[in-house]
Length: 217
Length: 71
Image 1 (cartoon, rainbow over the protein chains, first blue to last red):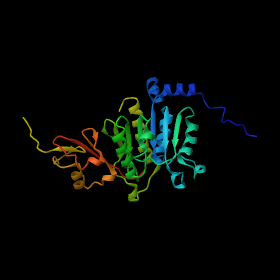
Image 2 (spheres, rainbow over the protein chains, first blue to last red; image 1 turned 90 degrees about the vertical axis):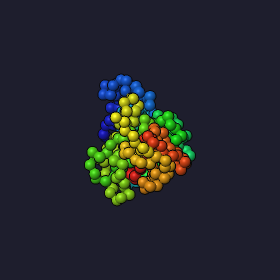
Image 3 (cartoon, one colour; image 1 turned 180 degrees about the vertical axis):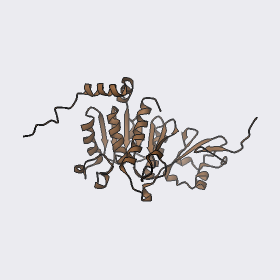
Image 4 (tube, rainbow over the protein chains, first blue to last red; image 1 turned 135 degrees about the vertical axis):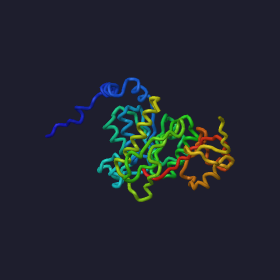
């Protein structure tokens, strides 16, 4: 019989917090723990953003997607082969709980619309737009900036294809609106989506969210 | 020395001679698909419902963010 190590090594909340403070600084961790970030869309961008932010110590994550894990997602999204067919919010939640067991999560298995966005995102300090569809991206950004001007919006545009990662940037559009990506590489041009390039864009978004929370952006 | 610049505003960092035009007119001329963009004017979002009535003025700073697919 094999020994079960799964419960033996999990650190306590206090141990994880102390380790975070050692790496990221006490003041930054305090601000991050008090913050709520909404991740809208849990695909190549959103699943990576959520994992980065959970690791960085963001206190609460609101995870929203209407889709289920598909085999064509596995090359770039943070799901496991055994999770194909499961709703993305539920599958990502399971993975996040293994990584960051003391983070608070709220999941919504539904589509974000101009009508429900305000209610879904009410508690968020920062909103990460992580959809794949250009119209949906524009809808969420316009809705959030019009109806919830007190929140920070971190959106993405242009991360498809094999171009250099150095073309992916974070653009500060206004004090409360940032856009990450190269601004032009459209998946609909048939150039594909490559995990490391999508992850670069997701990392730009996650870092921008962290910087906004600790007042550096 | 004084420089006089007439009817110029800044759109995405470029000087553009578009003062007096509405946001809708400028976007149409520049070829934007309005369902895929967000427009900020002087640090504030221009609601889509107001593109047709918002007139660009000398000295405005405008940002047009164009979204492409992929995520």
